[in-house]
Image (cartoon, rainbow, N blue to C red):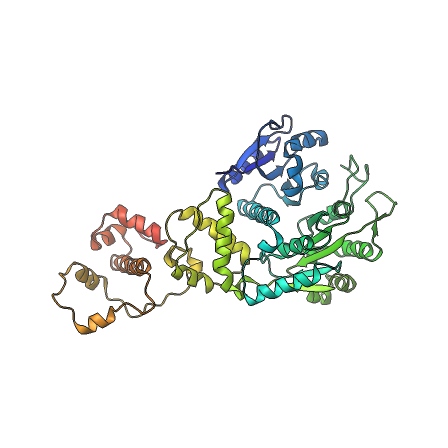
Length: 472
């Protein structure tokens, strides 16, 4: 099992403990430094994540980051939004930077880290291996990528959140003649408006409070390569004007400088918003839209390509195995339930679900009844179920010497076979529910009806995800 290390740079011990707790929950091994003493450089760390907090000295921050070495360009960084050196951190060459607010929201931090790890894994894969699935919509996306990749045309990637828009951008870059140059991504919606100009164009020393050194912006860092402007629809109107000028003239100035610099970058933008509607509402510039929308490419939502679910689950199993987690074995009934789900969170939601199931069911098949409630769908019994009393009598009654023909016909094995484990589990769940109904939800009484110990019934309730309001 390979240990995944996370570097936490935070002088505030209480904040550091909060971040470390989240990282440990996600399977990382946090390595904490207060920035005064960096981790031993001779250690062979497998860095996968970086958190930068309340560091006030640039030299100390640079020293604390030294153990990352060349891995920094392939890592995402979490930077506290109120960090004194947030702007400085933007110029340190990380593949991706996300700002987080303190006090931390556990669910938000977890979501960001999972997104970063998914992108990191995708970055390590060959371009041809990234797009999993052979459904019609995905084959169309692959064909369009192959057509546009060789050219420098601007691309506007559309699609819902979590559908994989950055994956398209990276694949276009790595299938293009610019593949040997940098791919630099920036989330326009995650960076405060007052910092975005410096993030994009860089700044000179003394340009504003806290600018104690000259820093390169994303345009400079991406020189010769590709600049990915994620969530372009969230960019402020004043910033849109400045970006449009750069795209038209192919020059820019650092904040605090009047010296123009030429730039040679390919622009790929992405958004989950309807930009044409935003134009009508006055939230997005029409001229910038047409400058970006040279080659529109839409990533289909997962609900439109559910035939790819088995392939996606297999791919996520491989990624989890690299982190030391066992594969998820999803039964046919569970897969059918997942294919009927609407997937509002798209592939990102599926990835998180597979990881969750890998933790909950490390060595047992996952049935439809094991899925979280929202993924199970509506299950309609083939016929009305008999009462709990009748079923218990049937269970304990001696088997008849001969079986009536009608019963024999009712119990014939279907031509396409049956999942016996799922079938028996469904029967067990039905009996448990009826016993609970008959006992008014009192677990102890339901256990007596089922002739099992109360602790046994409680374990089965947990196993099947049954959480009725009950007593006893």
